[in-house]
Length: 328
Ligand code: NDP
Image 1 (cartoon, helix red, strand yellow):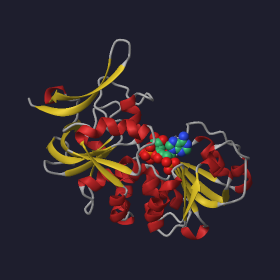
Image 2: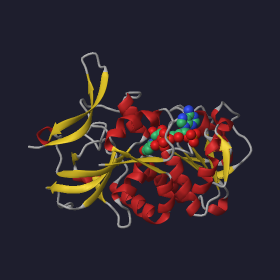
Image 3: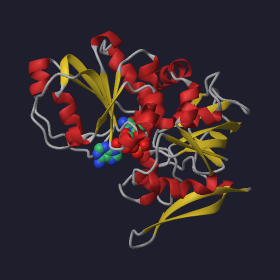
Image 4: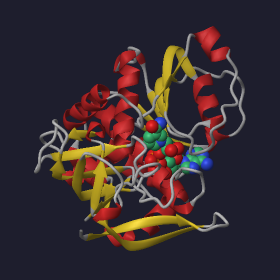
């Protein structure tokens, strides 16, 4: 038996939530066939919701939050992993129903792990994290719908956020003309450095709009949902497609069918949590080649393990730009 440091979310009899930095015994860990020494983790929007309790992300109590980690295998009875392997985990309910990444140790089902690709360090893997890997899934969804750079501009909403900032970097490297929609227009220089060709104020899209407007973009990555997604769909060019992955404005979709039935626009749903292993591996290998690691560095802020709880609140309040990495 040994103890390790962890963030723990608990609930009292009145279902009042509390969060603390504490020590946990290895004897108390949840079941799994691979034990990992966590080297790096990150703060996603979902981690913010879990720690603040703003949405019912946590479904098992008490919970070690954190949906992403990069680490080294300490022990494994899974045939696909051995001691010393460098691994990444994204999603699979970790940090929601199974103890997660905000700890020095994690014990998980080996089927949830992938080997960390060559050319991506533990820090870079967490700088990418679920947000960046989801951005890649969105780009792959657009590509599978033949939304190539020659079809016209693509829009990225929630541009300063994790998904948005990585999506801009990938799309610009692939040659797309990227329109970044943001509420933080004072970050124009940062967004242009990532590769955005144009910046628009998110207020243009966040209010109830007409079912269809001028055709402005061939495709897009939407991390925002609600009226924003409805307006994005209504301004998509004939035959275009929007990859929808987020709900930063809201989970509603107050849209009409008009863009679908008059312009043949497609809405492509993107989920990272239960995505099959083959698709994850493809996304991570694409990230190793299609994401500029210099730009990744520029959109990353490094924090310490002890700063995780504060950063989780910050992301829910929209105070975080780009991605945050915590090294153990
Ligand atoms: P962040 O908090 O890093 O970014 C969200 C961004 O959305 C903000 O930075 C802000 O960008 C914008 N935003 C925030 N509030 C509003 C609002 N009220 N109206 C319009 N825009 C707003 O989160 P992530 O990038 O990590 O995640 C983005 C979304 O994607 C979240 O909803 C998350 O839950 C979801 N997600 C889904 C996944 C999936 O598997 N489908 C996986 C990962 C994330 P700006 O300041 O530039 O306006």
